[in-house]
Image (tube, rainbow, N blue to C red; front, side, top):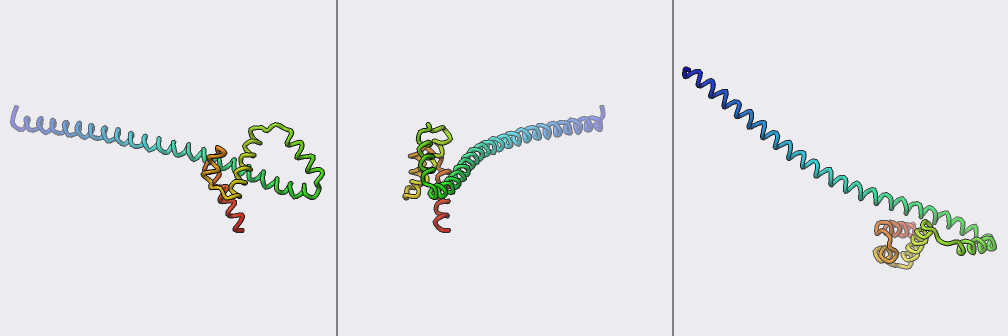
Length: 147
């Protein structure tokens, strides 16, 4: 084989080695990128789960506050007719509390404690409620006093 032939074989070998090296580097780069994206996805999924929990708690607080608003309106009507209000309260006292009404009672107690000046952290710990829920109630109470 002539010198030109050997040069051609050497150049072809170098080209193949360079192409193989670039292919291996690209494969490693893709693996690192996939690992990073998987880690980011796991972090986002954890954040999403936390946001779902907070959203559920906020929805619960909103429902309770709506019920409290309805009870305030009902309370005003009950003052107008005290006899029917007394009979209704005796029936409510006789009924055993359901889990939903127990939760509502906890929120009412939290509202009362916040009105009396307790901190949201104390109320949340005492009644075993979420701190975010109690802080939201505290903000609403402050807003009500400002308005």
